[in-house]
Length: 164
Ligand code: THU
Image 1 (cartoon, rainbow, N blue to C red):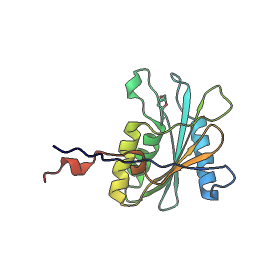
Image 2 (cartoon, rainbow, N blue to C red):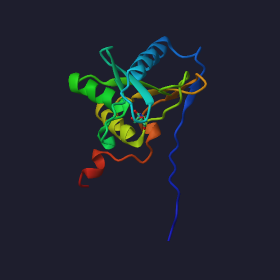
Image 3 (cartoon, protein in one colour):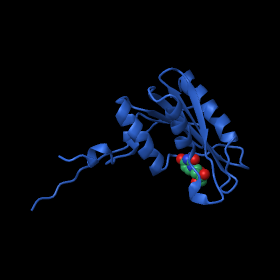
Image 4 (cartoon, rainbow, N blue to C red):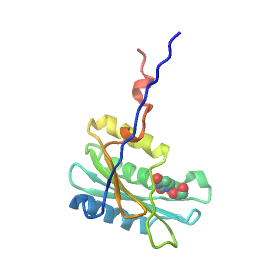
C-alpha cells in the first residue's frame, strides 16, 4: 500500500492601488459602476463585474436577485454570459470584481463563488489563454489571480466526461 500527497496551491498578488496598471484601474471603475446598479434587494450585497474582451470591449454585469432566491445570478456570470452571448468568438482577457454592502461607504473583498469559478473556468479552457482576475480588497488593494485555474484547484471539466 502506498500513500502520496497531491498538492495544488492558489497564489494571489496584492497590489497597492497606486501600483496597478491603468487598464486594470479603469476596469475596476467599470465594475464599481456595475455594482452601483446591482439588483440586490434581498441580500443588499452589491456586486459588480467588468470584463475586457480580446476586441477591447468592456462588458459589465452585476448580481440580479429574485424573490425566489435561487433564481438569481451572480455578477460574474451575468457579465460572462452576456459577453459570450454577444461575442462568442472573443476571448475574455480579464475580469474585475468589486462588492459592497448597500449602505456601506467602502468596498469589500468578494472572491468569486464556486459556481462562477466553474463557469469562468470553462471559458478559460476553451480559449486556451488565462483569464486574469482582479479583486478589490477592503483596504483598497487589488488582488490579482493569474488565471481562473489558480483559484479552482482540482477543477472539473469536459475532460472528466470523456472516455479514456
Ligand atoms: N454574489 C455575486 O454576485 N458574486 C460573488 O462573487 C458572490 C456573491 C451575489 C449573489 C447574491 O446576489 C449576493 O451576492 C449575496 O450572496
